[in-house]
Length: 477
Image (cartoon, rainbow, N blue to C red; front, side, top):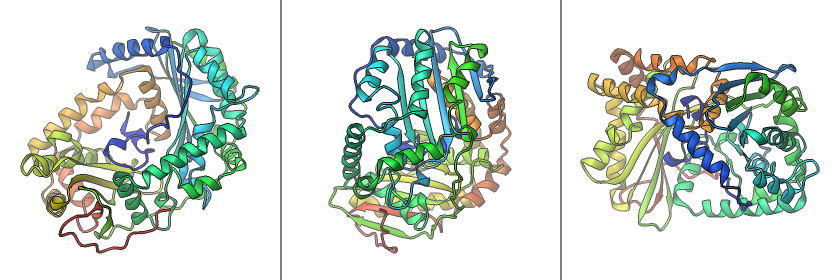
């Protein structure tokens, strides 16, 4: 997963820093053949030497003009495809948050002549993995298939994108499952903390809504909303395709046309304004009777295209992105034993950007944890990292980069993300150079401008001792 692709991920917590987990719904059990081969493929990529970062990425343009980026690898009979469309859950209609998420969960519940059971049975019988997910700023799908089932797999993807049925039974079944999920999130301290933080930072903007919807908004979604979403958002002009595995450019070109050629030429305009987060350094407290409080914190950040992004990425690694190696971890857990984990990360969005942090700790230790996090925030802004910290961060960030290429699926995902972020087809060769080029002077400069302790807004869910709310909780529905 590239930093690029992280940009399209919704904000929920450290264990959700990637795209929100794909909804796992009741589905037929697929053949074991594909998972077994996927393990082999993953193992093969994991064995690649680090010098193998110079992977050959080919630009494939179909006879009909549809572009995909391809990493051809014939070591296993597997093909993975990742498709990303610009525009996601942030474009849901007012009062109907959850449309994009419902569309993602129902696209493979029947298409063309195949009803839900027939569609899922064919996927299972042919060991094809197909799924969709909705982020705030994007809508994506993934396909993995054995080479021998390639043509039918691509055709099933075509059907799901261009001829979804949205039959009443699967739509209602999915709706009820999503409502149950929303009801569970409504009482989950972690989910409450992050959704409240987003609603606090973006009170008048779609970024502040419940991306997955609430019981009320999900109940209001009609089949026509799902049809409108697919008709307006799934188009050729906002389409990014990454492919990896056992397929040649000559084989892929015609498949691009047959799979995506029937999509509309242009997506509908998406009017989503730029916005600065309403981060005033205040504290929101949501009373919940739990022994341990969950804390979510956020301030304004910088966007993915910012020339200082890589420097900020490295500096954040030092502050809270480096797990056991970070300052926050050292101060909060190692020295004081206040929490099992604490973290920070950059969250660039299409129309805004954030720096986020979080911790969960006993109610009696929340105040002290908040004080330390804010102090470390201020220390990084004032002094920046040390030379040793920067050297260690650069070593880790460059050395660990090839570990992201651990399967055909991850490679396809990376290729689609690179296009979505306009990083260039040679990004994999250039990425580590950006990290290596960071100087201590740059790191101190960016730390001074990026971290704003006076902006660091906190949401605490629990019954924290000695923590006073300074800001009212918003209505995050």
